[in-house]
Image (tube, rainbow, N blue to C red):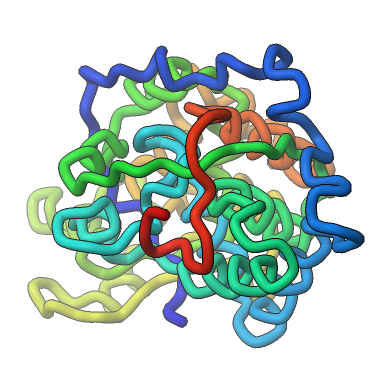
Length: 327
């Protein structure tokens, strides 16, 4: 599995997002709650099965952390958390240009197959994504957090809908507004972007900061970092190389606050990373998180949980046997 890629995302300000925010949170009773699957798959602990599958992949490939966190983001920010990104076929979300570098599909499929051996068609692919991302977040060093389950799987998946994902160069104020429209506040935005601490970016997504400022690097980028990145990503080289978004040695696969420390030092790789430390809307949160190593570790979980409430379907189908096609 390739390293998790930075989000090459596209912005559509005309989102119909208010209808997608988890409106059934606290109102769905037994249809959507923590522990929804208790007793619904015989004596099998559904959440434990998902965790075991994720841990197996994690032991083989540490990119599993970033892959699954990013997969949840790309699913939930398009049509809500309905596993529509998993559907295969012509012109599905999975085929959209800004989803081509998304990974982790095989992990979700492995969990689905494992669960359907015990209780076919009971556990939704949408829930597996959220449970798997929770497991990955924990394995990355963050605090464990509870998640609601009971989601149903969507039947519609359109590549054109992926245009709703934010661009990697989205201005911070626009990003804050976009996240707010999904029910996520500024702190959530900062912490979720902080997951770049375990991500990477392709050279093609970095070159604009290295060469497009009168032929030189973005002046907000640390000069030593710029020189190092230019060696990895030569101008117009069509390089397939990647760079860690957090280049703190030993921290590449750990959900810690090293990313926040680096962007304060001008060592953000993507434009949005660096601007997070400079914009008045987010600067203070970045400084606080960089100064206290417990903040990110304890608060990324609740922000992931809130993201999992976007566009929840509590009526409809649960895919059976595979997450790749509708029932």
